Length: 390
Image (cartoon, rainbow, N blue to C red; front, side, top):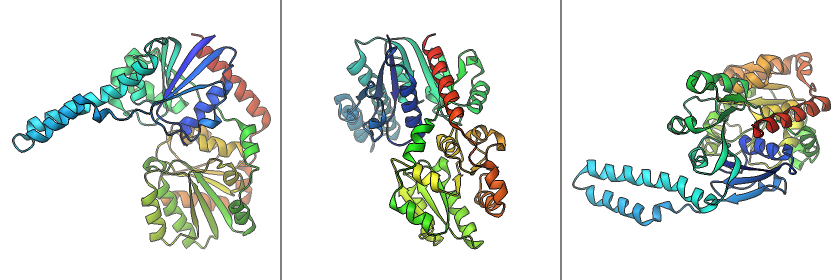
């Protein structure tokens, strides 16, 4: 039995977490002993992992309290009135010390005497450097971002030491090959997989607000993503205002939370959209909302391989997506949904196209079949087996 270690930052409500759940589910527990390490204690989705996955949660975040860190901080404060240069030098030493502690401490504490067949940094972050400190026959790193300069300081240091650099979509593979030609022999592609039967089952658990929305007779839209800048919720609010000004009667469910929520709430209030846009925050089961909506809208600026769009396709939805790298790839450059520019006006116009042309909307709906899912699952498991058997 092969020992596999996955490292990631957290396990709350992002697409990376959901994709890793599917990885663990397709790996045969008779062949693989799986351990998952989390850098912090955001663990909302842990219960969705298979029981055979061992989970280690790093709960030590007090690196600034260590004696050496306190010494650097004190020196910085003491030097501040006399020499800004020396004070700044102490701050830099403090930052470097804490950074190394974040990488080295958990590696030693949890894995000093462990040996794995494969160590996987499933995100490019501190885990990527930490993974290289853990004894493993092979080391793989996964790249989920559309930004080639994403954590460039880490990639420049770590990528030369990895056996494989895995892109989660065709667009990401192209991006990585262009950005890191020196690693072309290491770069491979392994797309995400969606557990369609599970999504179909969960979509039947309809909450009251979805029932109320459907019985109201108003059109219903949905967007599911973390509420962070790159996901473009501000564009969705702008599109909602344009649609409202066109006299469209609708309501729009925003499913997700994040640091941009206060800004989004302010924009909703500024445009007077409180009765149109419903900010649901983190929803453990977003599928009833996505299944019930008339149009699924994905307004992101940046995407690698957006799981939410893949889930909307599985649910048979007509989709309007911005032309992010991942949006274009998943929708096959407009074959599976409408692709629009990354601005509020274009998003609104895409939605209006579906509203005004029911035949066009119907042509994009209900294309995904159980047979498609069986094929995808088989191929996904085979690709993982091949990767872990190298």
